[in-house]
Amino acid sequence: MPLGDRALRSYVGVVSPKSEFFEPADLKVTVDRVVYQPNIATPPDRPHCFVYFISIHNETEGPVKIVGRKWVVTNSRGEITAVEGDGVVGEHPTIESGDTFSYNSFHLLDTDTAVAEGSYLGVDAEGRRVVTRIPAFKMTVPD
Image 1 (cartoon, rainbow, N blue to C red):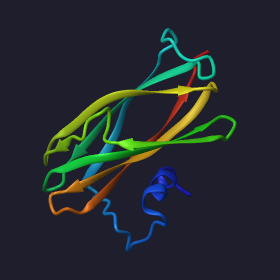
Image 2 (cartoon, rainbow, N blue to C red; image 1 turned 135 degrees about the vertical axis):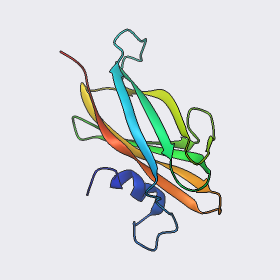
Image 3 (tube, rainbow, N blue to C red; image 1 turned 90 degrees about the vertical axis):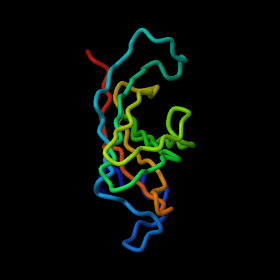
Image 4 (cartoon, one colour; image 1 turned 90 degrees about the horizontal axis):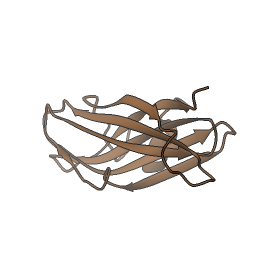
């Protein structure tokens, strides 16, 4: 299964060409930066904090409102944690055509290495439910 499919399947069930979700080619996500933050206070069971910076680029012909997100984080033991919720960072941004929405947030890990991937759910100007994938990125505690 290609990276990103696990998170997408959680939204759409079995992914098929006749899915009720539309995945526009011109709605893209970039992971701009991932930074290990060793000096952040964290719970003892998840001592590693990684801050990630993400941009959602809307090059479609109309606005897209982001209404939800899903993250799938796989740690170095192969354990999978899924996190989903409304909007992004407490917002439901409407991204106009040609615009970009950027934000940062974090993952707390219980292992030295993990991979995160996911997807955003949105609604376009025609009321279609859209999905766009968050590319997989690796988080590794530096030596």
